[in-house]
Image 1 (cartoon, rainbow, N blue to C red):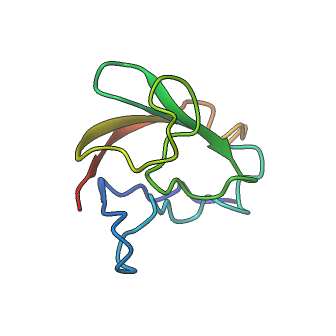
Image 2 (cartoon, helix red, strand yellow):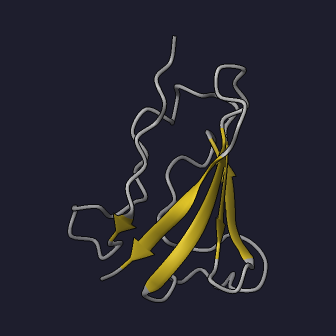
Length: 99
């Protein structure tokens, strides 16, 4: 039986090796079919990934902000869908990005 993933509320993708990716413990290679969506404060989808992509590194991969650059400092919102019968409801929350 899998435990619920542990989701942090912050990340700092500045390359110092501390909290660089949005590291959700107990997610990658545990919930094989998960979908993680990251939204800007304006509600624009800026990232969508799953087990193949791994952890979000602060770079948008879709839509309006896709420029292969780190997102600006600020609050972003996530929807984490595990696609697991033990956790049918999505996890919703925010992550603060700072450098």
